[in-house]
Length: 81
Image (tube, rainbow, N blue to C red; front, top):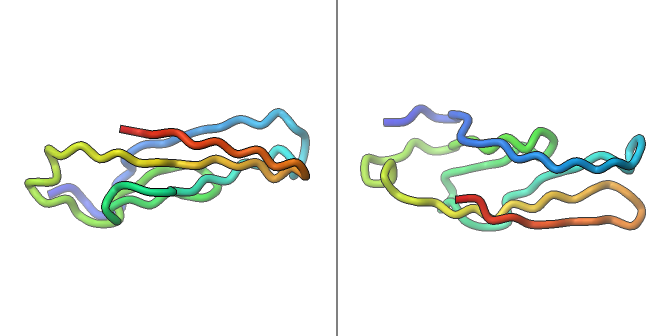
């Protein structure tokens, strides 16, 4: 079995605005069957549930969104496999 809260992946978006406007937050929009979570600040994707033997060979597709904190907010989403 894979350990609980194991770092699975990390995503990064860079906003070149200064100060608070340049801060980026992340969210998991869909996918992962409830087995993953993402840190809003760091973009680290971790397992929140242990994977069964069957799931260890399974492909998971995650839809992750990054959004900046600027007044004219920008957001984008990416599929991660």
